Length: 331
Image (cartoon, rainbow, N blue to C red; front, side):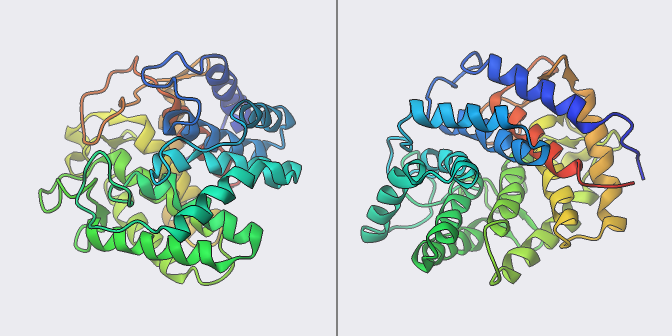
């Protein structure tokens, strides 16, 4: 197994600090409640828990206060519900009910006016009709069910989640198509699958029992994902291209998080999966320079070109998720 020779904290803290300093400087990151920033906040929250660093919790509280703890403006959009996960992390730490009050109000409205329609992809889809949505929204719903001890939130999220799986998960490849435009085309996007894989961990973390289906799906994906890892430790932007494709750090980060957290939770076997997680971590660390993470494919919906100089908030968020889980692994 590959060893962790450099303490995770000495790598992850600079990434967190650099990204906090540069929030808003990357393309399409201006929305204070949008998914781009929220993906970073979610990763930062997990790193705050793993490192027991109060300054990151304090930062998340300031962000929530600036936003008045509101979600994004689109009531049904999974992307605009992602920030609720950061608010939940703040609530779990500070125990202030104000932090989840707007979230609760919005989710109650959705329960009273449930979205209808197919999962055919459109830019205004009100259901979870793209694989990224499985990271953005479900964990927020399961978290509120946990906090409120109210199964209505869990039941809604469970139904919507498995409807999306039925539409987008390829039972032969054990991978997700990004959305209905790609089904049966043989294109499996690294970050699109990374979103779903990491989302499974965040769902399971908020469930107490009744999670067997989610664990089974995690194992199915993990078995496939490790077979697609490149020789250099990364995963390619297009998963089936493997070594002939372009290395990419955001999808790689989410895969490391899912593998390492799955081991930590006792769902995945360390002997089988641990070496892949640690080799991926070594590759991911090589993409950082003074806290700046490179090789991050920019916002998109399919495999695309990526340069070493490319960075983004969601890449840093994925990195911190990976750090939070890899720090618990032992050689």
